[in-house]
Image (cartoon, rainbow, N blue to C red):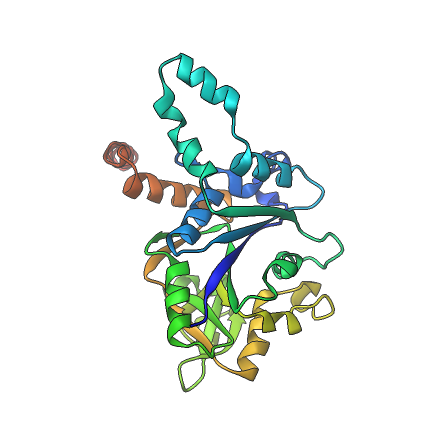
Amino acid sequence: MKTVKKAIITDAGFASRYLPITKTLPKAMVPIGAKPAMQLSVEECIAAGIEEIIIVATPGTMAREIYDNYFHDKALNVQSLLKKQGKSDRFEPVKEVLNFPKITVIEQDASLPYGNGSPIVSAKDYVKDEDAFVVLYSDDLIFGKSDVQTLIETYEKNPKAKAVIAAQEMPEEVWHKYGMIALKKNGTLSHIVEKPETPDKSPSNLTSYGRYLLTPEVFDYLVPSNTGLDGELWTVDAITKLAEKGDVVVAKSEGKWMTTGDPKNYFMTLLEYVLEETDYGDEAAEMCYNKFKEKNL
């Protein structure tokens, strides 16, 4: 049986919509509760049995050092202080992070074109000999069942697939914001229509987002010379080329996809996490309800 052991998680943009905070802090280090968004993506991989994770950070910044510190530094001074204060239990979340499977942090190759495919190309040497590997964009978060698990399960049922992509049904009013999936007659991917201008130009109600299972064959098409829209190197362009050569299976997500791509959506994602995943969710819900009543008196 083919196995999937590695994942690439990308956070290689400059996140200009988050300035000034992203001048210093990588976007995926913004907190979702008491954890950075990046950790939630890492935990999604771990829950699916991934054994090695490659994080691709923005070049020319402190991002690589920040991620390395977060996932690898033992923070012995903090541990010692908490022990003296009789608060050693507060260090347990740090121990959990330090016990994660292998995490390697690299910088995106600065010589590559701009685009969401470039971080994947930067990690090529880590995954080129695998049967398949998973790719996650760190500003996409999944609540509920891990998409990575769904991708792997789908691949195990379709071992000849060139790739598997996650998809979620979305309401018509937001189709113009996303890549909408066109299907072949056999139900596999035909192509993706990026941000259709009107609903009638969308081939389905299925949107593609940052969760893919790819085979190394993708690197035949994900190359610097194959830039597309706006001169960028797009992952979906390479996936579409794979779909011309064989089956790219579309797997409907069994979780809830939300994005942290901009401050507004980040807040909505944070609120979802607080309401559904924390022990203070009821208090937050009550506060929101009371604020709503005040504004609508």
